[in-house]
Length: 391
View 1 (cartoon, one colour):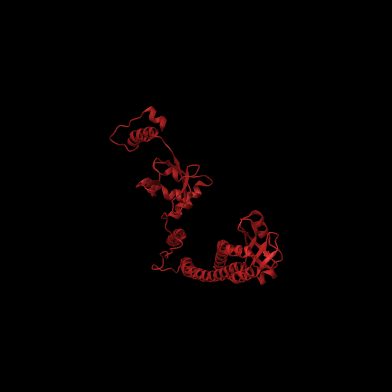
View 2 (view 1 turned 90 degrees about the horizontal axis):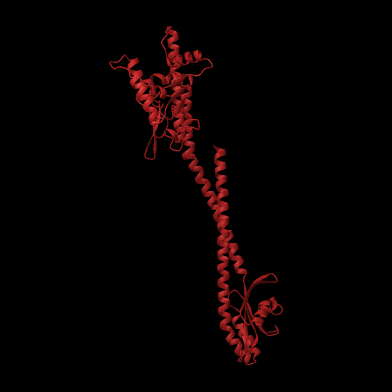
């Protein structure tokens, strides 16, 4: 039980860890994509709104005004700085922090000036991760005069993803501990208890100490298929003990009464290496379909009652006509199955007859010929050559 608990808990931990890591990876990717998209939108809004003021200051040829303008807007959240470049890539105005971070015009600004369109780029400057949004600047004649660079520090995005991974790890750890505890409780309440009661019950049966009150099969909700097999085993054990006691009593009294066990020994001794085969029209068990359920029916027959104990005693073979509407569903490739269903002791071999064959051999030769003849009935036996051929 300990090995089972360990394997189950280990499997649960592994499965939860894999699922959580995959989900966390997806969540981190979605969050990182969202943060990057939000950063790009904010940079674009700031660049478009600021470019008009920068273009007017460049038109007035006021470097001091440009420097004050970029410094005033350069202290926003997550903003590494703002820079204004001429068409040759030389800085005209740049925030002090950005001047220390980058040397020369970044490629995004050069491309924006060359293509006359806004450009965005995620890149690195030294050890820092940054995002650059570059906007081309025009004069009053719509000629390109330079470029505006909005530089944002993207380090907070990496910090946010690390925080998500850390929280995921802690959440997975807590889930694994909780699930392991719940699993242990379930195993103890749902498995360990019933198994312990079953072991105690089987020990009582084995040692012969089971009272009438405790002889019934205990309630095994989780192990219903196993419970049915154990119940059959218990019945066989009780039958064997009862037969042994009866045999001992008969030997003590020097009686010669036949019992099922004596019959089994006698039949096996007479057959030797041969097999006992019984052939009849009626089968001892047939299967019938009732909606979606498959039912096993035992026909009311004195023949079955008389012959079945003998077949069970020597593991014989009963050959009969498969008359049930679901008989074909239950046989193997050789049209055989072991019976009785609860405690198989012998083989049932089914034959498949057409209606014409059944009419000729059974209702014709057997019922109209053999039956009146063998029973000395007040009905003259009727024999036909065609019925004999079917028989």
